[in-house]
Amino acid sequence: MSAARPLVLACVLAPLAGGVRGQEPLSLDDFDGWEGWPVTAPGELALHDARLVPIRLEFDGLFPGPNGFGVPPLDSLTMYMDVFEEDFHGEPAVWIQWTSRPPRGGTGAPALDALLVDRATFRLLFRVGASGRGEWAGTYEVIQAKPERVQQVTVDEEGETARHVLDGAGTYFDFAAYPFLFPLLDLREGLALRLSGYDYLDKAPEVLAARVVGRTRIPDAAGVEHEAWRVDVMPPHRATLITFYVSPEPPFFYGWDYRLTRDGSTALRLRLRGWTPISTR
Image 1 (cartoon, helix red, strand yellow):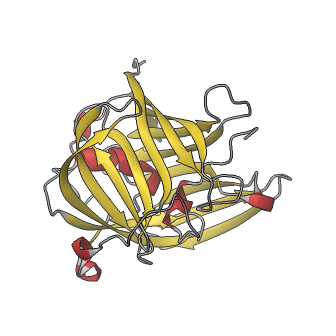
Image 2 (image 1 turned 30 degrees about the horizontal axis):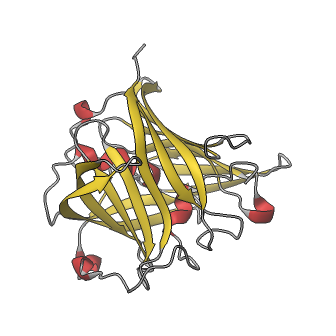
């Protein structure tokens, strides 16, 4: 691969064609009755936001290859996740930035996805990220989210813009912030949630089911095992299952597995390579 492809985190919620082949369907028994779980919006969760500290994480990843999202073969990427403390219109906020590039020795410009969330509630405030794939590569979405309105501007590779407004919007979590939202919860086995979110590809609200499976051990990129909480997330279409491995202490996020439920095949994977604290200003 000669250049890093756009990182489209929202796409991980869409049904996929296939991936690294599994052997048998995944069980979704833990999500029985998920339609009746209460829908939780920002401000309705008790978050231990003092746990979160400025940090940089480096990951080895498997991401969409030359044949498109979810179609073998997958490409190896290096990914960085940076978390900063910021102010947004005078209020404490968290800046979360995903940057991906070809693996070590590869060439090409990095792809960027960045968002700001309210520190106390993790409410989405602002996001800019790549959304284009294939012939639409180079397209970016810029989002400003307020309780009364979400304004989204699409900017294509020619610089043309299109504006979409969702009035009476409410408040939303963002999928790209989940790796640092889950570690702030009082995690316990069996905890079940439906999280109110915003899908910037569909330009519409979305609700995702999340369940804490329990404690597990997860190898990092070097094969060293770490103890972490396993949190499974299921989109409403039930075609995919995203497993997060998180901890309430740094580095907070050890990686994820994104699999197709029909056969257990892997479409995305991240494994922690290393992490460092970031000095505050």
